[in-house]
Length: 310
Image 1 (cartoon, rainbow, N blue to C red):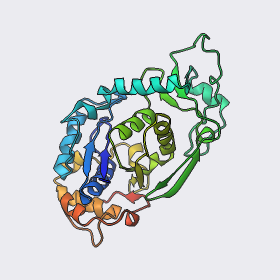
Image 2 (tube, one colour; image 1 turned 45 degrees about the vertical axis):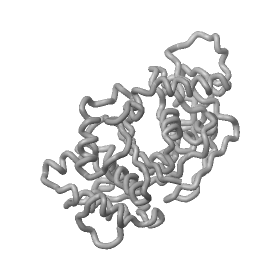
Image 3 (cartoon, rainbow, N blue to C red; image 1 turned 45 degrees about the horizontal axis):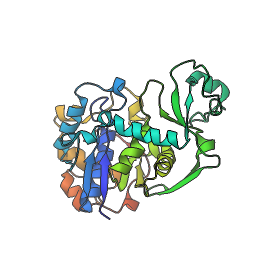
């Protein structure tokens, strides 16, 4: 089996260090195994898209030495906002199978009914609209939810975290496939994209590990073959341990470039921090990282603090 990985940034701003961290790991895994790298622009949530950021992300990746075989510069098939017909077809297939229903609950209404989640957990949808009459009057434009079969358990073997198992109806309940504003939900689009694009290995941040069973379930219900292998790498955090994405002024590759930091310094620091290469930290090209890539089992599992010096 040829390794086929993907990096899928959202163009909501410049490429930050955490994005470069996962991009490097995904790229190196493919290149070390003579595989294929896909670059997919996840711009489906168009209100959040920042003009020009997609182009800057591509520029920064190329500057780091991270190339790709297929991407938005070669085909619109790798731009989510150009694939709405594909997602509509998938949603229609689930509708015809009786696996979806309309939901006009607001988040506030769900929160009032659902059990209070523990820290880091999601609200469990209480199935308010699951058996509601389809001809009823709607309070607002409805979302479309997946009717999760009772007792549905999805398990997979994460290449870094080991076995992850989730009973989806208890963990999150019937989840959204398309929002009330018409935007297709991440759980649907990423499942369809990864399956249709033949991705064999998904390397991404571990904050997405808990959502993986939902994506695997969607793939199964749509009749796709075996899902990809997953490796959820640890997050990059600030010096104080706070998640970078949650704070203002997160370090971006463009900012480091402007400060005169060399691409090889960034790549070498990230590779060493993630455990992609053995030995002392030093500057190196992306190609060097791929040639010296350690087995996934040796990669870092704990959050990595952003260095003060690159």
